[in-house]
Amino acid sequence: MKKHIPNTITCLNLISGCIATYWAFMGDFRMALLFIIIGAAFDFFDGMTARLLHVSSPIGKELDSLADDITFGFAPSAIVFSYLCSLYTDNGPRCMSPLELPFLFTGGIASIAFVMAAFSALRLAKFNLDERQAMGFIGLPTPANALFWGSLIVGAGDWLSSLNYTPGIILLGTFVSCYLLVSEIPMFALKFKSWGWKGNEVKYIFILSCIPLLLVLGVMGIAAIIAWYIVLSIITNRLRPTT
Image 1 (cartoon, rainbow, N blue to C red):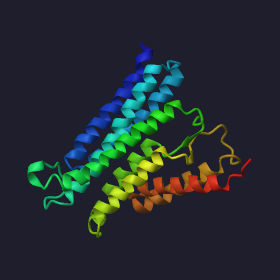
Image 2: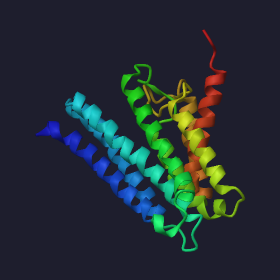
Image 3: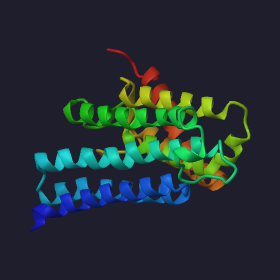
């Protein structure tokens, strides 16, 4: 019985991603972000449960990647797609129909957002085969990318819509995300071999700096934290002595 517990939690992650996608197409980005966060919680606990129960399996690994691509690949892509479509309507964010807009133009451009789902799948496939990522990541983790886009649209969507060339800015950001997902940039993970300061300086600095960002920026603080995580990872990698 216990061997099915981690896979059940993984399926709850996948279901959360499906619900997040539904709300994204309906234009309720707050609910979409909420279910991405719920999916991230399930994603954390499925791996931990498998290790605690000693029931890790190849099926669980493949199922985890499938669930992650739905929750952290397809769902954020749907948020970006729906947000781009909403920029061309007078009724605010909501699910779009080809009958309501020049779909070949607007819908076609907005559909570029789904390239992020494909790159998320590629990143997950590489992660499964890359033995270098035991204590850190190579490239941006998919949950971080999903949380960035969800919180950005929720926290700063109205402000972004007031800018000139907003679709171009969003699509450029999408391409940057795709690059970061499959890049060879080392990024630290919040995994601790010990709790001392030495050797964990970057992790503790990051954790402590997250608190004021959340307090000052609210939901938008999540996007700021992910951006800071990327910058700090790059700086740390640059300063690391070469051998």
